[in-house]
Length: 510
Image (cartoon, rainbow, N blue to C red; front, side, top):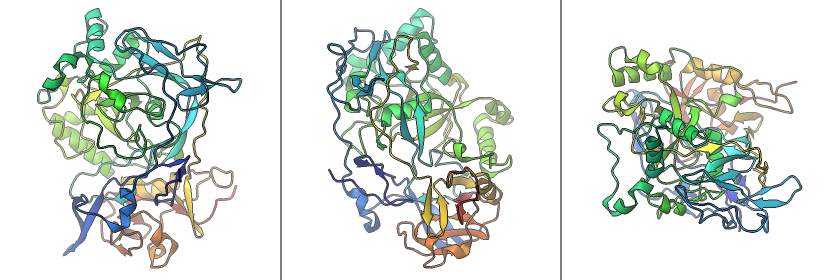
């Protein structure tokens, strides 16, 4: 199978025998008016776009993996098996783990009483991703962070167990009956309905309309916990950097929306875990951070208390909860919700349904509108290894992830700070700490407008259209879909929420 090539902000990125697709998240269409350039809306593709014809070509899906020996193991309390014979595997593959002696064995499983839990081996993986284009919406909506998963970076996850499928209504009802869980309640305007054709399997639908606290309580009652965001993403993506649990291509044949657990096997991830790309969104343990992807590269925070995102979120809380609601909502923790494309992440308020405002989409902070208990959000549990479990390692290596890209004499950081004013943009570059030549020093700055002149190295490789901050004012690319399009200066006040990318002229000295 030939390796796929996909141009992106860093050029072609190869991941094993396949390609980590840096998918297009959306692009703004720019129109010149009396006040200069402005965004008039997000546009979809009404027809083929020549510059992105590669997006219509098939991307190789990672090589087929051995069948999971426990695939027929039971759900909702039936007996599970530990594989055949002594548990050894014929060869190393995605559904195996490497022992200390170098041999591979089929991943261990155990019956958690309501579902089978599968061991995920220790390993490194590519977490997060980066969009094909950075198109900033200015003025039409309150500023919010859309690219909180960027940039791609390597993460190490220690071996753990995770539920083969999402927690079902049947499993949760049993926990309520035992008194270890509390009854769920859907928002007033969002009842959880089971399609009529699935009436006979209604109890096998994922349990939704749970708060984060209720999900965690169930997992604790069943000897587990909610998975961390890194654990969830690793279990779905594996080590080959795939975009969706099943591979790199959008699969239109997979159904969307809640499904009974006996159908989620249609969506199978790298390690054989079901239903992480279709079905419902899922709570994970992590508190939500707008800049989670950038955090490990920063020496200090770059956002300010009166910055555009902070102001927009305060205003959003006031709209949702009424006068004085900002203080009430500020005391409510937000947690990460994972779904679909494995790097996707949303923010969910940990509130019971009765405490949610009537319409959580109000306030214009979509797509990060505050969600809590919802018929679209379920969960699955994870657990640490038991004393008798052997800590396996994944028998494959994650690809190297470039953190910076050399463009002529310049080095460009792969991550982008979203929705920052000019002060925050400068602070973002100042606080960046990216290894160079074995050191961990910074030396980053915002680019200058002159570095985007026709023929200049940055003009062809900055992943527009922006607008981005430069040291001497905002700049935008005149055509979103053409990487060779010229850049132009635009006129926005320093308090406007734009994007920021940082460069350094040379590797800093030790």
